[in-house]
Image (cartoon, rainbow, N blue to C red):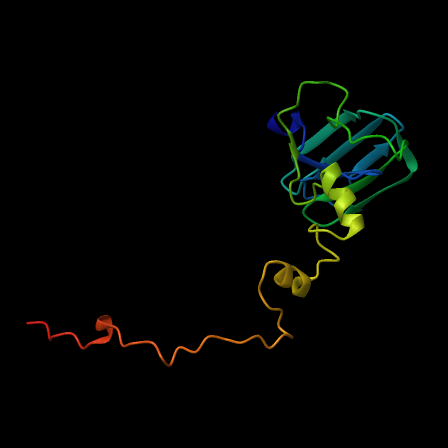
Amino acid sequence: MANDIVTPPAVLWAQRKDEVLLTFNVETTDPIIKIEKDSVYFKAASPDKKTYEVKIQVYDAIVPESSTFGNKGRCIEMVLRKEKKDAPHWPNLTKDKKKPHWLKIDFNKWVDEDDEEEESGGGGGGGNMDIEEMLRSMGGAGAGDKADKPSFDDLDDDSDDDNLPDLE
């Protein structure tokens, strides 16, 4: 009887300007996936014969033809292409304002709108970061600069350096 119970899988989601990233945390070999313009259907059985099923009504339209998914062994990863490429980020994954208990934000993949703009411009977001330039702007020298380094030879001996008496 317990095997007949269908539960929704744990789903992680993140987004970019033009796509939504979903991760279904189910170890399975042959999932049933249907990507439609306004929804995503997922059904799979785990190795322990537990059945997972969910239909997600997405917040806005997606393009099923250019959306993809891949089985990574322990999870199914999906990339949904947004129909409106220049629209603002979605406030939710689903049309429903209430967040389901099985849906969580994937902070490892999440990129805010502001960060996405910086990333393309080469700021602190990652790919084009120049450490040398950052160190120079902070007042330090980059690795290539041979700045005058302080000499520690002329420092007085500190009393903390004296030998300690033996313990009794």
